[in-house]
Every structure is written in C-alpha cells, then in structure tokens.
Image (cartoon, rainbow, N blue to C red; front, side, top):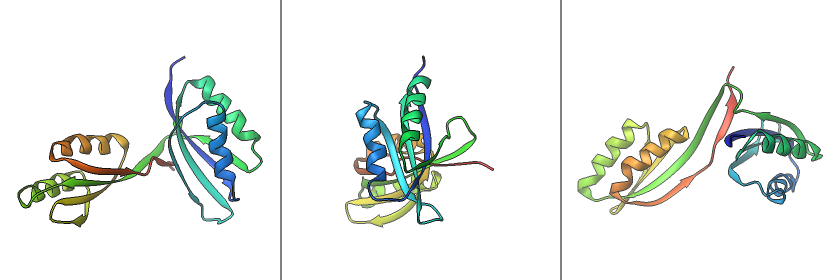
Length: 160
C-alpha cells in the first residue's frame, strides 16, 4: 500500500488530559505525528485537534478505530479526502544588512508575507499559506541566512 500524508480533524471534549491521550495513542502505536494544532471551537467545551500523519490506508484505519475508542473524541474527519483549505503560519527570522533588507521585504511581499520586526542584523517575516508556498519562500530566502524558523503546523477546514 502507498504511504500518504493524511490530515485528520479530531473534535474532542475540552478536558484536561484529552490532548495527552490523543497524542499518547499515536506514540503507543508507533505512529509519528507530522504536525499538530489544537484550539477551542466556538463552544469552549469542545476543542479541535488537527493532526497530520503519514501512512497507508491500513494505518489510517487503525488510527481512526483507536481514536474512536477514546471517551472524549466526538468526531474524526479525514480532510485529505475532502475538498479542504489547509494553511500554516510561519515566522522566519532572516539575517540582513541595510543593503539586503529591502530585497528581503520585496520577496516577502511577492509571497504575501508581512514584516513583523526589523533590527539592525535581522528581519522577521510572518507568512501564512499552504506548505508548498511556505517551503518555496524558505528556499528562496535561504541564501540570505535563516536565523530561525517557527511553524505552527497545518490547520484545516472543509470547504463549503
């Protein structure tokens, strides 16, 4: 079977320890979590966990079955199979000089990035987009010297 990246949206009751139980399920079964985001929904008693995991259909089925056994799990949706909007937030701190600062800002503007901090030796860019866009920006900016990257991981929602 072909191993693919899956994006799972897991709606859970918002209790202390729920995230730990969900993450623990993955580690106990030897499945790696590629990215993980979690936040409350409009209902403060409900949270939404977005997990990306790489595996074949058999692994995905096992994960889904095990998650459904957890008492606080309400719903699991494989957003990979649906038309979905996938985004991640990324901050990049990039080395710069007075001479390179404007070039970096121009490249950031092309990618719809936002300059959030400037110092004498670096510039920090905020970028939101799909992984391909963010990865393309990283490769473009790499020659300037990336000091630090922080990425949120994917968050996703079904279209329509």
